[in-house]
Image (cartoon, rainbow, N blue to C red; front, side):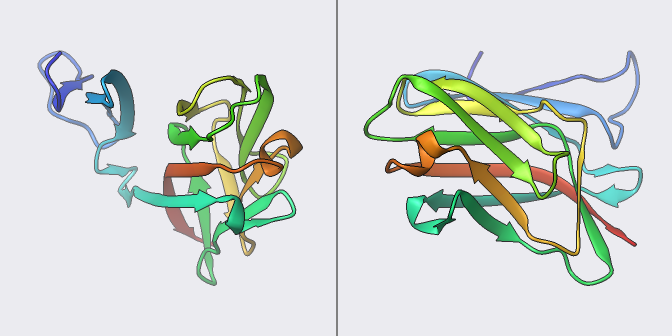
Length: 160
């Protein structure tokens, strides 16, 4: 598939719907990578995307603070977050990254055996962050090494 070509999951003979998933496949550093995101909005609420780069310097214990929703709003994380994890010394050990603020978090578990690794964080249906920090939690195997995380996290803000 050519770089930057969009494949749209559209209903037969229908128009693009606000909650349709769009799939993008791009050649990144010589390898094809798959990306997905929701189109436009979800139930008339704009879908926002938190995009940022974090390193071990951003850790407080095993947590990285991303943002706090504004007063009166809750952030609902959507499935399909993606992370590019880079480290100069892959350990070959099991590693975990969670995104959220409670036990109901987006989660990925993998073996840290390559650099970089592209991870899709989709294990949970949604995660609610209300009046607290949205955080990334890494396990002790990651917290102990040098790393770079590039995070793309789709979410919606709802008044509470």
